Image (cartoon, rainbow over all chains, first blue to last red; front, side, top):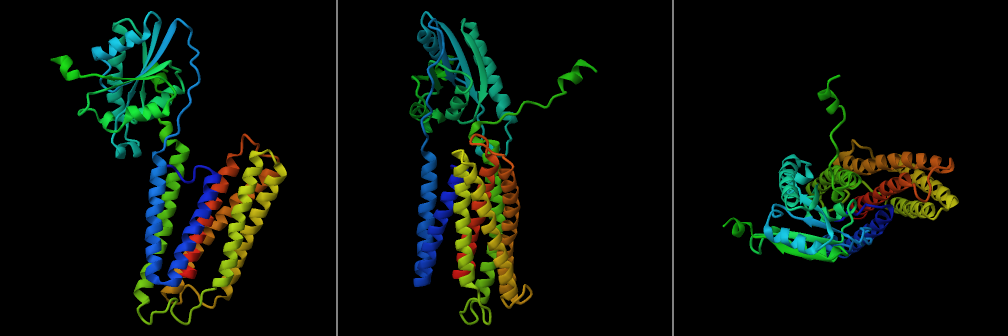
Length: 212
Length: 200
């Protein structure tokens, strides 16, 4: 949900919205008590719908052209525990081609909403750090120039945060297969495509099949 | 000093995402605390109204009368002050220092007018906090808002002095922005208080 008081201009608009809201409710009550109550309920529902639907819109984040040299290819990989899969490793290598591949792995610190809002993130960050270390190690083992960072619990937000310090040529989002992937249920790939002006590849990694 | 002690000399790095920045989270917590504070007063007011309204169906109970007209004029004054503080903020964003100074000064004067009018009205209203539960809740709600206006005026005074001393630029005007948000919040609460306590 967006903060209605993020700026003075937002707060000024809120003043007039509340004035209109209260004015309509008062007129309703003036005519008839039950009409006033009905106006209050309808306006409250409309206001809640407007605020929550506004929160779903995510403005696209424009990415400046990456200043990487011609012989270098920068890839931002967002994955939880699926970086080690052979599908992803082969995809990264094929993407890089003959160029020197610089890979930045973002491992989101997945957490429950309650723990996020109470800043109880230690366990989530520690778990993400463990996955990140393993991911970077597996990428380096196949000769890639890899580094990593822990990201926000929301993968799309984690990408946006990473773009502030790393300018990639493309994005790779690694998920579990359909049916097991919570990220796919939440439409992470679609949201990332809408939000970022970068080529995005979705790689499905089936770790269970790999283990078999 | 040992090497181990040196390692722990600095605090650990701060981890936070841009999803919930400290400023936004702080504003959310502030709004939540204010909603709870005003909400508790409104709860008492409505409880009193529901319990005591059944005697003869009249609200406020006789012989009390609410100064609806004066409070209405006060509402217009406060709404005007919202417009002037917005003018001040817009002015500094455009580099118009005179507009900033005039806007803040006008806002302060309008806010002061509101508060003085409310105090005068308290003296002339004809009842006191100890005269029935209606009087207590009336003074409680309007007084709570009046306290917020007083805090807002203090902030506005500091902002105005800083504006006249040459502070704030089109790039750096966080003090005006935050103070403006608070003042608009005070206005929003007054609209709700006025409609609830005076009109309904």
